[in-house]
Amino acid sequence: MEPVRIAIAGASGRMGRMLIEAVSAADGLVLAGALDVAGSSAIGHDAEAFLGKTSGVAITSDLKAGLANAQVLIDFTRPDGTMAHLAACEELGVKLVIGTTGFNEAQKAQIAEHGKRVAIMMAANMSVGVNVVLKLLQSAARALNQGFDIEIVEAHHRHKVDAPSGTALAMGEAVAGALGRDLKECAVYGREGITGERDPSTIGFATVRGGDIIGDHTVLFAGIGERIEISHKATSRAVFAQGALRAARFLAGQPAGIYGMDQVLGF
Ligand SMILES: NC(=O)C1=CN([C@@H]2O[C@H](COP(=O)(O)OP(=O)(O)OC[C@H]3O[C@@H](n4cnc5c(N)ncnc54)[C@H](OP(=O)(O)O)[C@@H]3O)[C@@H](O)[C@H]2O)C=CC1
Ligand SMILES: O=C(O)C1=N[C@H](C(=O)O)C[C@H](O)C1
Image (cartoon, rainbow, N blue to C red; front, side, top):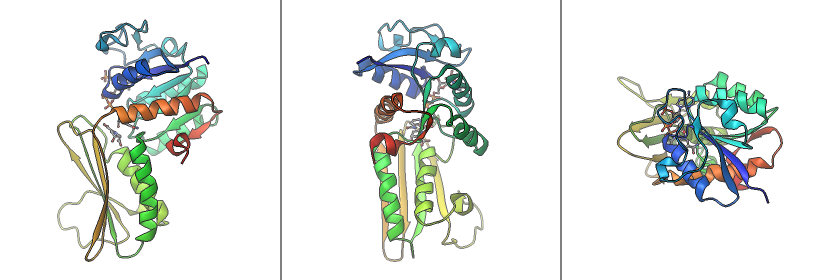
């Protein structure tokens, strides 16, 4: 079988490099393009140079050139970058795995619109563990729907630019959905000053940023006399990269539509 031809956006980023290394080591996938922003010092360099290898794929900011030979683009960049990549992917018939987080409502609506014409897999967290936790949270929330206050705490490295994390928001959506609540109406993002007593219908979020923390998430169900904590801790970005490669293999065979990690993993 022919290998799936993969392009990587944000090629010099933390996840971009992890993805290039993972594609290089994977069976059935081949690196076919590498993108980064204009002005990046990575432009023009071989995509695998940081591994001490030569792939023959030069990093470019020219979207058409970078996508010309690709079937699937994997994008872990910034929301503005993803939106530009999405338009180019649709024009060139390239499928898109989106790992970027921090989209606003208008951008999410545009992604849904593109999904009518191009195959897109989008997930704020591509690790198997977090996607299992999302399922566990739904069961826990249904069982603990009375008398338990729900708080979500996440911690990431000092370079992360969006908060709360996409994963924390996905966990909030999972819990709110299971309880029949709308996260937009019940989320409380941080507290300060004279806040008054806790409203039991709310879901609270707290954010920690520091050092090189790859990604820790805990959902706390706090009752009277007992509490439950469901936690996930990533200790390597490789888990996100491996999930993205599974998603790319899955997406290569799919028609236009918006897909989630649960479909990729067969949950
Ligand atoms: N879904 C998941 O499983 C995971 C998601 N993420 C998400 O992936 C994203 C990237 O994370 P990370 O790799 O740590 O970030 P980095 O900052 O390390 O990398 C981002 C890359 O994207 C490039 N970039 C920045 N702005 C643009 C733009 N406007 N257009 C195109 N490219 C751009 C950067 O270039 P330059 O450095 O030159 O600015 C860099 O190469 C974040 O949104 C993060 O939350 C991260 C891990 C897992
Ligand atoms: O920026 C990161 O690093 C991560 N971002 C994702 C998120 O916002 O949830 C996933 C993971 O936690 C790492």
